[in-house]
Image (cartoon, rainbow, N blue to C red; front, side, top):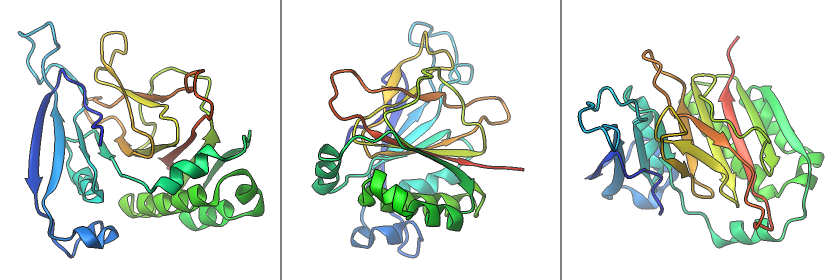
Length: 243
């Protein structure tokens, strides 16, 4: 597991137990009552400015773990981003390596039920690997459970958008996952010119909150893969929709 945490931030590693009756823990029944490793970043002073307090330096507060139980940390008000560094079966990698290129873009807003029905359409099965579509549907259900069935907008596309600017989550919560090539990046500072840019591992699932009351947020972007990469990854973005 490559943990997506920049070096200028204070880091804490801790083990803790989670109860068996947790809904999120039930996704991994074989791991009940085990000690789970969490790695958490704490905003610190800028690297060359020791006199700046950690409260002044508005780095995002990030926590990461390879177990789905890390999603329980989304309940904490002081957390800006939670990363589930999941490990997927080898068949996922093989499926993406052997797929045919496609220019199809899926972009739809609606209820989880409406989105699940659209994801299983003949057109989608023709353009995207069924294995990936099934995972997108499961992540949509998980996103719905976390946001209490809030309407969603799902974007699923091969490659990435042309806009390489960093931005803040537009709503309350955003889910980002890249299948294959890792093209999702986030910055350790509000200013990309001075902060450290970090890439999410392929298949990792990031839950990025919108800006808090003080305007603090985790800026991020979906950028195109390097030209040396033969197969562009498929990227998924799920946003909350209001109004």
